[in-house]
Amino acid sequence: IHYLAWCNFRQETRQVKREANCWKRRKLKMGKMQQNNIEKIVNDILSYGDLLLVANKGIGKTNALMVLTRHFRALPKTRVIIFEDFPKWSLEFDRIPYLVVKDSWVQETEHVIDVGNYFLRHERDYTVLMGSQIKAVIKKCKDILFVSEIQDIERQAFFIYSIIQWFYRKNYLRKFKNYNSLERIVFFIEESQNVFDSSTISKKIFNRLRKIYSVARNLEIHFILASQRLQDLNTKIRGRTRLLLGNPSLDDYELKIRRILRHSRFKKEILNFKVGEFLYTPLDIKVKFPLFQQVGKPYEINLDSLMPKPQRKPKPNIVVRILQKFGWVVEEEPEKELEDPEEDLDEQMEEDLGLLGEPDEEW
Image (cartoon, rainbow, N blue to C red; front, side, top):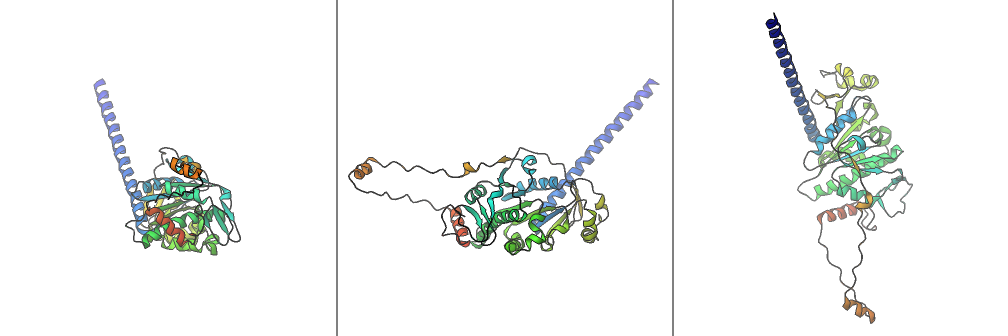
């Protein structure tokens, strides 16, 4: 009897181990499948343009964006620029430099104002200050996180536009001069309705932003947008993006999403999607994003350390000092600097923007 009981116990133990191993293999296979699906999404975005992620609050939009961002950062010759107006990425994302954008950096103006240091100047409404510092950050850091403290929606949108405009002009001039390769720029914008809302994007001041968005893919510039409602974004914007849909609001589903998904296998199931589950509509695949695990911590950029320190004028040699003592004026010829193609490109950008005649510290 004891022997039979021991045999049964051993058989049950083996069965439990087999089931556990089978579950592990199945879980590993599902993980690899989901990883392949995420890579498919990344490759599809790079091939066709932009992405709009839409889901209710608490469904995992930020987590999905962080996973996608990590994939884009691993690509060669790719820069990632992130905009957020709430300190979440700066606390939970991987190691990345971040710059806190103060509310006073974007000022509303009726006409051109006379300031000595600005990043982008517009003739009508807004001026972005701290030009030398922002330019130094963009040049030094490959990937950047902008944490905005700007309170007004339009001023926030104008700051984002100014950064996009800088990269657009740079890639445009590289393309025009037939440079061998372009930098691939990927912009991540949370709460993107603040930038691409119909009431904002339709204003005359943002005409250039609409134009940039229309031709950005030709210059290796991509946009990854996120919003809680599909209806909040302008039709001209959302109509040109690939869609990644999580569990939507019922109002959004009835008005827009149900019609978009009329041929999808998940047209009804999407209302029951759990946290982290999304539908990539172009390929009609369901993707489960893994929980983002932070590697390193973001660190704030010290603007003072980026600005060049003024160099002391070298002390004249003894011959010059003797001649100066007797009233002779001797001027030494300045050393000729080697031409830098990047500086030449910046000069071309300034000339293209009509700012070449301004002081050196302005942009």
